[in-house]
Length: 500
Image 1: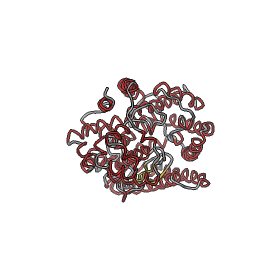
Image 2 (image 1 turned 45 degrees about the horizontal axis):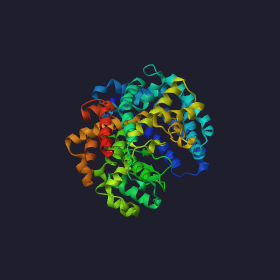
Image 3 (image 1 turned 30 degrees about the horizontal axis):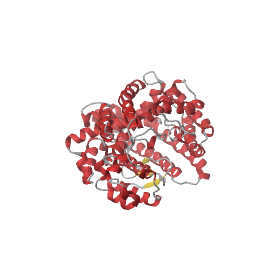
Image 4 (image 1 turned 120 degrees about the horizontal axis):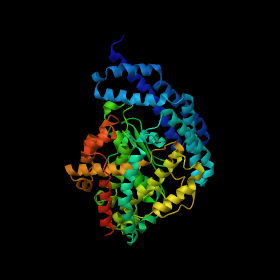
């Protein structure tokens, strides 16, 4: 028998082949979402199915199982990163072995095709065009959940665990109840107050200038253009190919400058996380964020705790005024109050900090209902509108700004949405811990992200997937998830802004 270390080399070689196939799939997704010809979408969807199938073949091969068993027998001799790599791969192996390969390939193709149909359905506000694909996705996921087995007795828990390890409906119900109790009263108080002067939000801003400023602000906050790029897509996203190639997209609307600015900052938060993962993890399956919630904590921290603070804009507001002369009529204080305007809105990605979690709760409630069988796909538009009215007091005028507004369901990403709200809570907890070591706002006022990025790299980014969410949180802050930091942050900020 060969020395066990030779099996480690074989395992790493297998992992590199799997990673190469995953990167090939990601490149096709990037192409499909950033300008590939529409007529070629069908063939690209088939390619994704083939590449995904080949990746699964390698992951679930008898050889991979043999390698894992040998390395698991020598786990005490493995270096920490190798130990975590083996552990992570075993989890993926066990998951995929329970799903027939042919069905998984068909599912990948379905999601790729569904994604394109969703885009057309959203453009035409035609839910009926999209619903047959959504039904197939949900039917398939229900079948996959049965194959994999329920997590903690609830079918939806299996999907939640995919994005936030250990998360359950029971935990999330308690989490959202805490936020609801603290946030809703604050929203009601603010409704009684007059809104600040912020007519600049409705002005027209040349898209060419928006693109220039998006590049400027990305560089300002520390996004490395030598290891990334910015393109345009309908729905902004981040795509990583290891720490040396992390790409983002944003979008531009002539009548909504703030959407482009804060979408760019948000995606840069995601990207900086992956750009700062240890180079020792590059080329492994561990070179990505540990969970969707932790990933969202980084994007929401950059977008809101940094980007919507007064100190963030002090060194660069004059640059923004130079780019868009209409802003010369508004002081920095007026601008600050305007970008923190809070009022119920229809679109999640453009919601303010205060009401954002209510948007997530709408989606969480509907996903729970879909997988418990208490609602069907055809019920979604009506239920969506009822939930929006119940939580936010607004009703979508059409499905494009209602049930069709997010790309996630068309891509099969069920169980993902709660991570956005968890990300807000994590972000406030990390921010509080960072601020104990140095004044974050002083660094923002200087326009210097060096200390901030170094703290985030030291406590979060460098570890990739080698640590679980709770491990990172406890290591960086000294305690597990505590939503009260987020609630206190909102109460303090908006009480001051609205003189409550």
